[in-house]
Image (tube, rainbow, N blue to C red; front, side, top):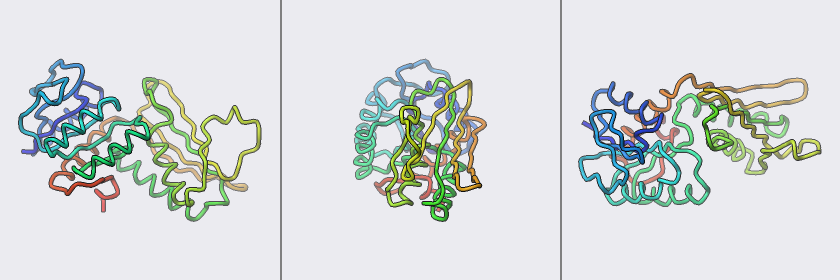
Length: 250
């Protein structure tokens, strides 16, 4: 039986992941970490990771960027693999996560959906064919409670496209402040916040007299929960290193 520690256990995604794990054979949530320690299932929840010394095989983190340091230090101390599914990290925090991956296995992705990661692959392929001839814009939509903008997924898509173009592009987030024509070497990234939109990402390739659009729409949070549990089971037994969805589906 795989013993999972759930970081962010009392958040919305924490509850979804707990339900997903409870319906799956061969694994269980052994403990949770959260500022809110209200217990809603058959596992204890702690504010301080150091307070849990019981059985554990892997950690799934869907919490807050501010919690990443104590969580990763705990994981390194216990030699536990970590699935980092939290978003909104600063560049410094991302560097820290990558450094931790030198000591423990770390699965790090801005989006745990298999479909979104397919979208990234398709966007890279389209860029290889259309790059330099088509303007590229990314539109992401999320619920009105999401704090970070643009989404980590939008940035993941933009980075993949930019890498395909030799990292020659600049990102334009706030076009209304720029009273000039669109530059050829930019990727527009636009954030929409409203209602209960789970997550929607669209990549637009706009050329002369034709437009190509790639789009992914999440209908529920469960796809991210399933992805994170799959990543956790994949990570067990792996050597220290940085892993992502592309390695899991190879």
